[in-house]
Length: 525
Image (cartoon, rainbow, N blue to C red; front, side, top):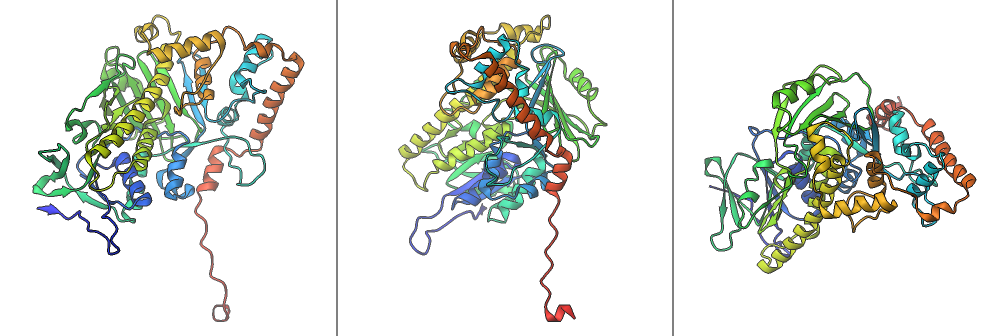
């Protein structure tokens, strides 16, 4: 029995819309469905089963998520209410360089440059002269985060401070929210288990999804959001997987939410331990927690016990254990099938990039959206470019994550000793050495992380340049001291005007009272 997911040419003679079938729901599936429904003319059906659980660990995001929500026309206050979300200004890394130390990778800029000199070169010179404080003193986001403050500036309010934000939210609630959004815009949800993918014998493309009970879902294009199982993408001809576990050897995670004491820190916390790290993600109703670790150095039972011993409050449920291999599918787009989310690969959520990689994959696909019946060569060319861009993006994020592990001074711990001694990808090794030698940084093409992000992590992990740029030596020390003090003073004054994060969130998310109808002669009587 075939489920009707078909289309015919429109009455005015336009070509029939592309029929897209999404296999799997969760965050990836419903993000894709919502975007296709809102931003394209495609006919969309999503197949999922209530009997199959989803992996809900991607609860922290980076500022780009705001672009996705804005593109859909989602109201920010409603979104935060529906997902029990909080604001996020950065990520605190505790114990990564060595035990007892910490730093923050905050969003936004750090300090102000002078001419062609970036701020970190001025900071290095100030440090040589003994007048510069920790780098975070010159970051508005970090100072606001550590003070527990949050603020938005109204549009058009002159010169506004640069303070980008992201969110913490319940990923399951976000998926449910996007499901309502997508279904209201015509997406058909089909309940069922996918048993197989029916292939075209000549091209190898997918012709239909075969569900339990013999139902068939036909489409022109298929998006695989079935998680680690990769039911569709993993079975496409010529598919392979790039395994990066020799650089990022953590292969297990255990996650559990816990009760909250009521405070909402506007930042994520990633605390290193002897064989990996633990995350803390504060939501309105609970705190998300997880332990990422390498099973070679820590057993599953030990990891769970360690996680439960380091919670803010009582656990809410049974810990969820996960197994994974770090890496990516070499060709996320193959034939008429695109892999998104965990079906495309896995990078641990150390820098909160999981949901961003779904978002960027969707945006990339929409920019290359094929037409129904496109020649095989045309589709293959688009798929090749999609895969090239994806490989660059994933590898750039991979290298940024590797930096956190490789540049450490946690001596005498086998996991960290091996990470410090491993051979790095050539591009990363060159970048670290160039920064250590000269303090020079550049952003390659459109890679995700900015110079400010790389600077914060390099310096936070103890990669200290040998000297500042020679042009910084020419600065008058008194002028440099005034510059540093002025930046710090401006930030302190701005943070001092901000409300507490909890109070701001409460006021921002509070539903607006319904407007009373204007009085008439009848109602005024």
